[in-house]
Image (cartoon, rainbow, N blue to C red; front, side, top):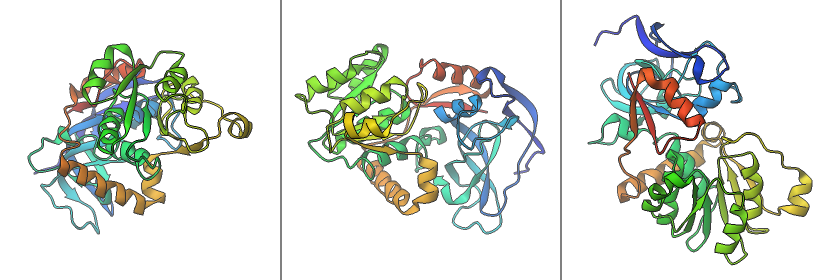
Length: 332
């Protein structure tokens, strides 16, 4: 396959959000460096991190103008120096914090390129390297979930939340899932034991009522803002864990005074990119477990809502407005 010199792509031109995400037709097609692969993108996953980068609120994010999109799936068409185990023509899914996946071609680290499972369309694999490992890492190596425990999952109707609900049920946990009312049926169908109104100011009280005053053993927190305070209050004293992996509702302040005198819980931060870099052994265990869950049918081919590349700004705006459900994809 001949590789063109230029391509269509979505370029973020400022830190003013999705309104300044523009479709261009003359972006240079990148070349893979050592340890990298070039893929022809057939589907790109849309993640909350893409929105954060567009607002300049992601630590270490790219500076505008940049080509957006951290997650892409497609066909390997060129490999860089030193790459082994990834062949041209293979279909893979991968992610790169530097972006570039909202395009017709993207360069990805070869070490993190995961084969698309046999029989799956490329878009069905979106989530395998971002949403699913995040949910699994939050539940198992960090959250230490066990059968019989109770887990509160915020943003349960999103891509990561839906995976977390399925996995937590598989591990024998009682699942309390928080979502906006119009998404409750989606979450209930995933097997959640109790569905809570994410917009309620009384989530803490509801969790305590459902747990006979004990609180949740584990809270998966991706909302931030006032919800972080509610999550700390809803966790079981002393042994409860709160794993924080997102801040869709903004930053929140937690002091040492809070942890000593108000919320005596285990507070754990999770960034899947940092986990991959700093604790590759743990990430390897997560991926091994994830493929076991795939083999067991706990998670399976995704069914993302697919939009054409040009609708990227609209999709990110809907994510910001919390008007989306499940995994979202853009196709060039």
